[in-house]
Length: 293
Image 1 (cartoon, helix red, strand yellow):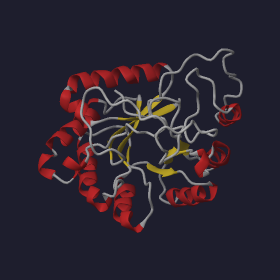
Image 2: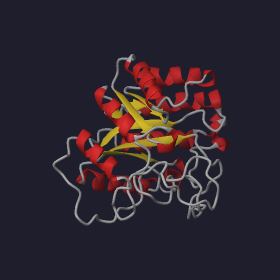
Image 3: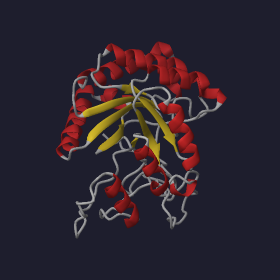
Image 4: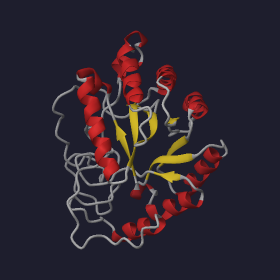
């Protein structure tokens, strides 16, 4: 009943009005299907070079080869150029500040990734301030993803500033249990905004019942096998065959679940056991977890 959608400041810079219209259209479609949206504004992950316009084709067999950072290294440590980032943050959050279809604002995905470490903290501070200045009715958050000492200051700021606590967990059940305990101790609603990497030990059958038992919201990575190619594991080599066990993703392009037992588990835990799949699954568009608006 929810999706997490990555945005990018370049699209605002290129055509702010058109960008907002596309976001509005997306929310309209999602709401028609009773799906709420969590928007992500910034991200330190993966490719540091990017440009607007047609994007490169996926590199065959490579996990998420087209994923890009926002704002990227050119702006991250250039505060004098942050005017466009402020306008983007206030413009998007302000436009949808009272829209019930927006569940929450995930302001910054995995700050400090790509070896940025604490260099991302000044921008994270500013992004929270800009978003607060827009006075959104929805909660703000930025997920804790790495508990190493190098990111301790970032993590502390993120949980202090987040209205709801969010975190990532791609490890096995024992690690997830430890993270849940730490996050629940903060006394705010908790959502895991990324999990489920089968061959890394994070599987629906182990993790989803745990989240349900502890009343933790759960948003797995990936939905339909598509351009992101996240059926392949992290670090996959170009040209490799499709793995027998998918890393991420749930559905095949024709809408059929890759593992029917997982689909049954999800229906049961979500209380949808009385809603069997259609006899002939309808084709499903590619996942919206990748920013594509």
